Length: 184
Image (cartoon, rainbow, N blue to C red; front, side, top):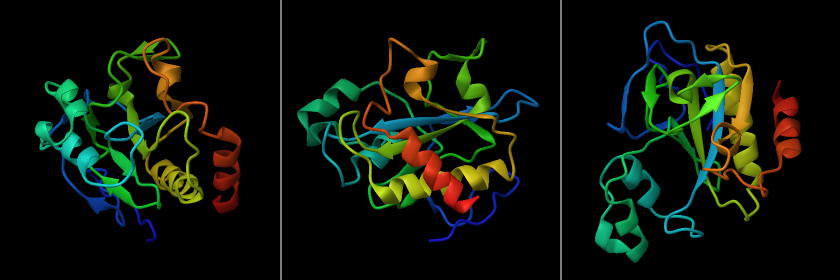
């Protein structure tokens, strides 16, 4: 699926739209300058299924797996989810603030949700990511940069050190840069 442009609200043509209410308005006149790469798998270490989307949309059946009870009061989302095979799902328009970064700071600025786009890769810190995920993430960054002055791409670990570890050592930043170079 080829990605198209972002509209005024930051909705990306070519992404499957699955709206999440776990978001709010960005501060007035706040530019998106940062892309934060995360990972998620539900249950941990298992891929596929609808649990991730259900978590982000507030519809996760907590009785479906014992681990899900630990997520009971969690209200989180991301702007995008990239599945293992490269499918791109948009949950929150980029003009809104998704709840992905939590307590965070980058280059001396707190509250990274205010000025970032969050992208979840279906994965785990210690499991290799797929080539389609690297390609899709690169395509997404190119599309985002056409509309927003994104200057940095970081992992969740970089904005919340000591609290978060994703996207983990299995994320190959060199491979990502190569994927990006091929399409720019």
